[in-house]
Image 1 (cartoon, rainbow, N blue to C red):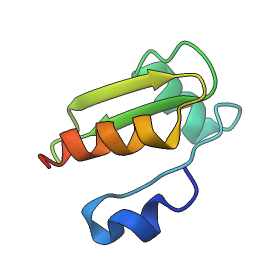
Image 2 (image 1 turned 90 degrees about the vertical axis):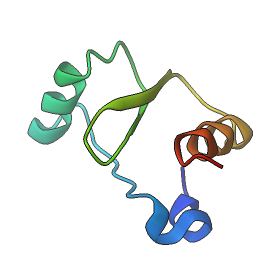
Image 3 (image 1 turned 60 degrees about the horizontal axis):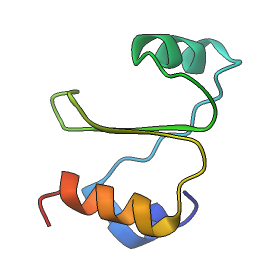
Image 4 (image 1 turned 60 degrees about the vertical axis):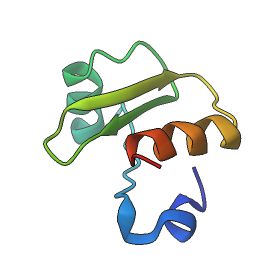
Length: 71
């Protein structure tokens, strides 16, 4: 996930949450995430566009972000 902000700039808002801390635990439960690491792409209305579980390749992340952005 490192560098996504550099690539996408203001097109996306990247947040890194620790499931062992209150805000991360809340998100983990809200999105019914099943393990670590987990990835969730949301649209501006907060609807889930994609969820990924486990290590993701840069290619996979970029592909799913581009799809979410309509590229």
